[in-house]
Structures are given as C-alpha cells and as structure tokens.
Amino acid sequence: MSNRIMTNIKSIGLLLMLLIGIVSCEKDFEDIGVDLVDNNKFSVGDSTLEIIAYNVNIEKSRVDNNDFTRQPLSLLGVSNDNDFGHLKATLISQLSLPALGVNFGQNPLIDKVVLDIPYMVKDTTVIKEITDNNDTIYESIKAIDSIYGNKSIAYNITVHELGTFLNVLDPLDPTQGQVYYSDKIYQLKDQIYSDSFIANVNDTVLYVDRELVIIGEDGNGNPIHDIDTIKRENLIPSIKLELANDFFQNRFLNNGGSSDFDNNDSFRKYFRGVYVDANGMDGSLINLNTRGSSVTIYYTNEVIQDEAADEDLNGNGTFGEDDVTVKTKQRAIFALAGVFSNNYIHDYTTGAIGNVIVNPNKINGEEKLYVQGAAGSEAILDLISDEALDEIRSKNWLINDAILTFYVDGIQEEVPQQLFLYNYEYNSNITDLTSPLFGPDVFGGKLEYKRELIPSSMPPRYENVPEKYVFRIAKYFSQLVDQTNPKPITKLAIKNFVRTDTPNFAFLDTLVQPFNWIPKGVVLKGNLPTANNDKRIKLEIFYSKIN
Image 1 (cartoon, rainbow, N blue to C red):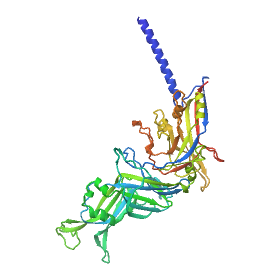
Image 2 (cartoon, rainbow, N blue to C red; image 1 turned 45 degrees about the vertical axis):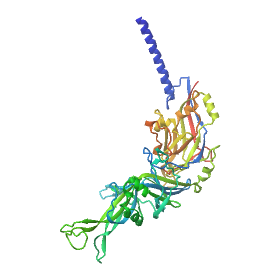
Image 3 (cartoon, rainbow, N blue to C red; image 1 turned 120 degrees about the vertical axis):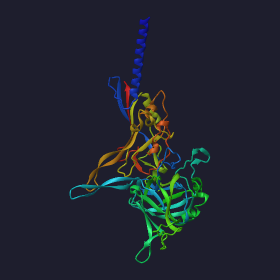
Image 4 (cartoon, rainbow, N blue to C red; image 1 turned 90 degrees about the vertical axis):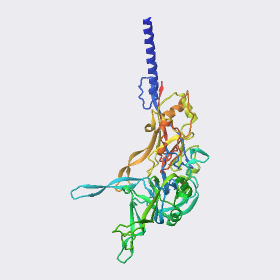
C-alpha cells in the first residue's frame, strides 16, 4: 500500500511540475523583450502598420481645485504663436480672512493695497567673476520658471471684484465637489486695477510709504514719512499689483466691524474674490501656484498708549504723557485661498492650426498634428483597420512589442517634455500604463533628443534638439489581436502630459482626468507623406509565430 501511495505522490508531483513549466512558458511569451530561442519551432518578425491621425479641438479643461487629490496650477497671460494662434488666460480666486480675524482698529487709513503672486522660480548658477588669484566666484541667481511665449512684450492686466460666487460643493448634489471648466463665463463688479505688465525676475522688493507716520523733517522743514521695505524670503520675485485704495477703504476698513468679516463663509459672500485678466495681441503666459499669494492691506490706525519718561510718541514736543494717540503701522493679509479657477480663450485663426482644427481629415489623416495644452488641441489615432486586424489575427502572432513613435516636425522651442497617450473613446488609461508588469517607465511618452548641427549659430555648433516621443503598447495591441477574447478597436488620443494624468494605482484609477494647465504646444509629423517627410507616425509590431 505504501509503495502505491508513493508512486501516486510522485506522479502528482511530476504533473504539477509540468503544469508550472507550461504556465511559466506562457508568461514568458507575454512579457516584453523576451528572448526567443531559434529552435526551428518558433520564428520572429516585425511589421510596420499604417495608421490614421488627425487633429481635434478640446473645448474645455477642468481648472478648479475642488478635488483635493488633484491640484492644478493657475495660468495667466496672453500669447500669439505662429502654429497655435492666440491664447489668453484669466486667473480667478477667492480670498481668506487673516488667521487672527479682522480688527482694523481706530480710524484706519490705507497706505497701499497689493495683490502679490509669487512666480515659480529656479536657481541658476552663473560665473560672477575670476579673481587675481584665478579663483572663480559663482553666484546663484533666480530665473522665472514656467513662463512661455514672448517674454519681452508687455500686455495689459486688469483686476475686478468677482461677481460670481465660487462653490466648493455642487449645489445640486452636495456630496460631490463643484467642477469648474475653462470655458465658464463669470460676472464682474468694480475694476480695481489696470496697467501694463511684463514679467520681471528682479521684482523682489516692495516699498510702502506710510503717509501718516512722520519720522522727522528734511532740511526745508518738510515731514519725512516712514517707508517699509518688504522682501520675500529668499528674495523670490513676484507679481505685485497695487489695487485701488479707495475701494478697499470703503469696502474693507470702513466696514471692518460688520458681520461680513466674522468668518470666511460670510466674508466670501460679501467679497467673492478677484478676477485677474490679461489682454493684448501677444506676450507671455505664466503658470502660477496661488499658494503664498495674497492681497495685503497696508494701513495706519490710531492706538492709545502711555509714553515713557523719555518718549514723545505723538511728536508734540512733550515727553512722558499718558493716553496719547499714536499713528501706528498695520497690515492685514488676505490669502488667495478657498476655490480658484481659470478661464482660457483660444483663437486658432491667427495660427497654422486654424485650417486643420475646423475641418480635420478623419478619412485620410493629416500631414501635421498639433498638440497643445490648456484646453487646446489633441491628436486622434485610428490605430488599425478592421481588415488589417482580421489579417493579423489569422496569422496567430504572439506580440512581443508594439512601439508607437511620433516625430517632432522641425526645430521648435518650448515643446512639452512629455506627451500622454490614452483611450479617447472611453476616456481611460491604456493597459500598458496601469499594468504592474509594464507601468509608466515602459509606457513612455517623454521627449527624446538628438544631436544636430545648428548652422545659423555663430560659430555653427551642435545642440540637443527635440526629436520624438515613443510609446510602448504591447499589452494593448495583444488584447486587440487575441482571437479567444479580443478587445474592440478604439480611437486613441495624444495630449500634453500633466501630473494629474498619472493614475492613482492604489485605487485602481482608470479614468483620465480633464485637467491640463500647461500651454506648451508641439507640431508632430502626421501620417500623410510629404516631399520631405520621411518620419511619419508609425506603429512597429514585433512578434513571434509557430512555424
């Protein structure tokens, strides 16, 4: 009996080992980059498929911060591009009360009101000088990051009191956050600023003249006012717009004791926020992080104090008085906080995109593809026809890799550093991105460069210039050609990548979010051949098959 049991155990063990070996082989064949041994049973090959690609306008992007897991940047400014036309962006935001509430005190009078929005900056190390001892001294300077377009052209900025109330929750379904898109129209109230503007990396200091605080006299007996010098930490430059004093004197300081300033709910119903608009034919667009931004009211009020024996606080020539009225410098900081939003307006008629965005060739595709963020344009891909797919299925190919390549059309400046490929029909991620065996690094989409001679430079030199974007979609394509359980053919789309496109793998997040705040654009070579177009879009398939 024992021998029979042992024999059965051995048989079961051998069967299990055989099954494990078969499963392992199947898994190996499915992995990208597998090395197949040429044993006359398998052969490998490759094929390049023709695809159809055309342009489409994206009418709107989501621009609010009501999804706390996805916080977009704001965009402000105007630009005009030969390829993508004219784009203007408006910044909209609520304000928050100071941390300790509001108490403007006795007889407050405004000295200055400033809307302050810090730039996103990066440090750049430059050579300062070389000393007599041949020592090199370096200096780290600030450079404005995330600014696009013609940085030397000034344009107009206006600020209005916002007339539309911004909701955190959807009034029709309070269990959901309110969503704001870039095409929303807002009501405006009083204009509180208007002037020309140009981004300035050296705008690091603010001077506030305290009109009511006298610190002495000049040689002619004229009073000398106290002046505050306001500097940000690390001298970070910022946009500084001096708002209308009379408006804030009447609406804020003269009303400071009312219930409108009791809490943020009451305050935001009373003053609904600021609408910062940009206008002009050309200029620059700036991505901004509104954290750290504020409207600061610098004012002077009257404070009753007792003077020390050697003090003359009110400047009347008498020392040591009690209960004297002293003009005292104050400030109240209202942070840009709560809900913020944006408005984008595109005019494609001034760019080359205008002809193809209105009437895209969906049958034959296009010579060029235009991809731009900030509710701009995307490229739609018809990856394979039904006939071609049926032919591949009939060949029983085992897909080892599928590489989709987009080439940059000529030398371009400020192109996106990464593009994003997704399922356009289902607005969902492609399986190669979300699969644990593949993931973002394998999936790709980052800009790749090549060394190229720049003959126009003096002297001519080689530079790294943008060349292409590459995606690997072996898993997606394998599911299409699978005869046992084939997936339906769907249109794909390519767009600017922003950080909210990264799936939340912990929650099996499959939907692509409609955020896109980076206005960079790139012109790609399309699928149609031209006289000098040898790098059309291509899908390369690498496969193995049983002989």
